[in-house]
Image (tube, rainbow, N blue to C red; front, side, top):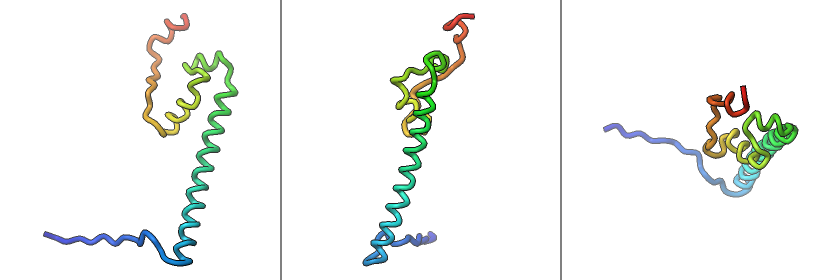
Length: 93
């Protein structure tokens, strides 16, 4: 049987180097969080700009915006099934 060893980076550093490394990591994750918030805000603003007729055509209600955005950004499992089947019967020919 062959033995393998995986080299892992140390998970924590001591002293000033460790503190600096944690600060840099924190700033990195903060940058990611701010970018995600901006993306979510842009999506919300775009949906808010639609009138009721456009929302109906998309099959959305204003109360569903946050849920729809979470699904679109793959933050939660998609629960909506969008299909063009029977659309012409729903809104007329």
